[in-house]
Length: 322
Image (cartoon, rainbow, N blue to C red):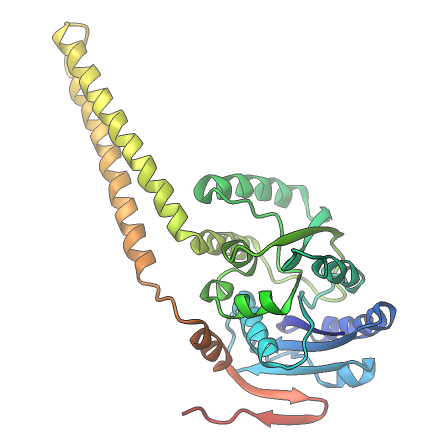
């Protein structure tokens, strides 16, 4: 059984080398063959090196990107490359810093081999973040469900069947938010409880603004659902405005309203309605600017970011595309 391991790497050479060594141990214990696809996301100071493959004794290649494209787009590029490889029985997506542990891969693979499962995702059984992060994350999950009607309890660490790899690598949404794309793709999912590991070296570059942006990108994947719920909320608000205006004028006719009260209440209700309507229209216009490509074109566009592919100690530039 050959398993492609897709991982984005950005300025994290030391952690990448340690992960290769641990993947070699996990490969022997699981009795499968790993093929590592490391996507170098435009690293300049500490890029991953192909020497790490040779020292660990694992098969792998590094996709050198022409520029930094971000964590999620890097994964999308790795998936597109994995789909083009022959004889891949499964694909695992994981981070290269050590927080996604190689020891959890056999359980993900076992879950994805079950009948009726397309993707096995790592659901965190025990979190190691600070209480502040966990509090904000709990609030975000509830806001996400309110906006989209969906539940998102997992991240990028997952195992995919070949069929799921084909679908995920052909979706434009994968480059926006991988976990949200799994839900959007309607893949049959198995949740596997896993504990988060600790970084092998260095410090995480994910700060609070980056986390907020990452969360907003998950909502963008479900723009159609968000707009639908906003439209329903707008209709409900319109009905509420009508009731408020009718109640205000009724109170005025009965002499139960003080001078100016009807004007204030009616003006406030109408202003709130207009602002909500304008926000809905702007969101609709912005979301309509995105163009959904056909699956083959999505993969081709993703691979255009790759400037070279390094295997072992050789460098193979990509051929020019016509």
